[in-house]
Length: 94
Image 1 (cartoon, rainbow, N blue to C red):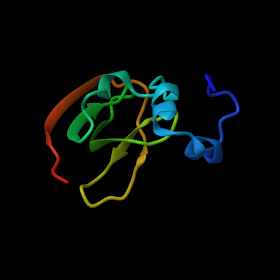
Image 2: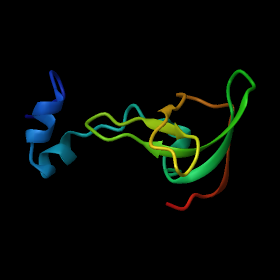
Image 3: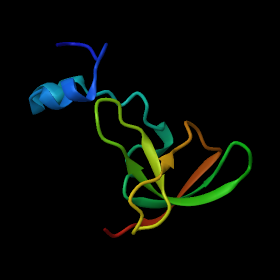
Image 4: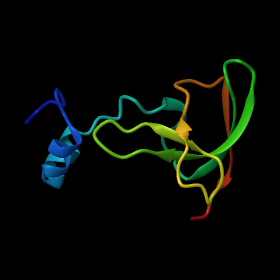
């Protein structure tokens, strides 16, 4: 297998780890948040709204960044594709 076309969860989990690593794509990650996973950040959206959250990352063949509200949260919504600004605050402890 050399593409993600027609990928399903069942097909993904049946693949060996090395093949998953070769197929995984980071195209859907927010470029401004790459490398900030686990950090609490303050962002200003392109609409001028200010928000703070911990940067998370989903799993699977096409991961996205997620906005985690607090350390004890179990998930969050999808991060925007672009922010007017991103400021790192501190490394969130797990």
